[in-house]
Amino acid sequence: MKKYLITIDLTEHLAEYAAKLQNQFNRWDQRWLPPHITIIPPTEGEVSIEQLKQLREFRFSMDLHSIGWGSFTREDGNVMYLVPQADGLLELWHQVTKIVGNGLHDAPQMPKFHITVARKVPTVEWPTLQASLVKVDPRGHCRVDHLTVFRWDENAGNWEII
Image 1 (spheres, helix red, strand yellow):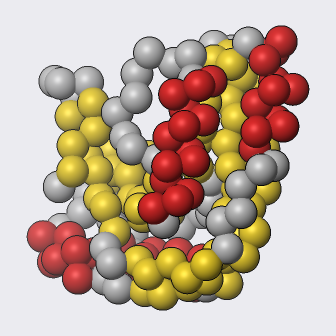
Image 2 (image 1 turned 120 degrees about the horizontal axis):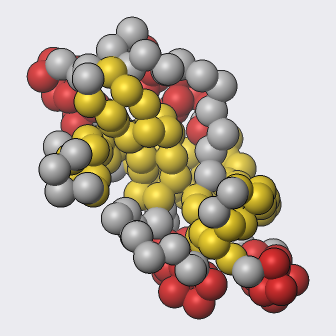
């Protein structure tokens, strides 16, 4: 059984902002993916060639109208993330889950759309990072020209685009 992750790219200014935060605050030594909005989190299962074709051909438009932030503490450190708000984001998720069907065993779960910006953040740095997280204005039209489907490569120890 393989592990898959489905994401969408960010608008240019939001991607630049998220990358800047990652470069400034991230303490996690593994960064396998560029900034993105997670649509289907890492999930075990199988995706057929037909499903991959449908995911590659998928197109969608939505408007980002606000962004929030969140955090949680893990055993290996703190995680900070941006939370995008967009009319149509939930509809996009519904359409993607229709395509993958039962192929991904944990999908469909109610999504927690997010953009991870930093992991293993020392608690002492949280106030500075939190202040940075409220400065972004993501509003604008976001055309989803494609979904990105990743598969975990166990041998290489990273995500590969398929």
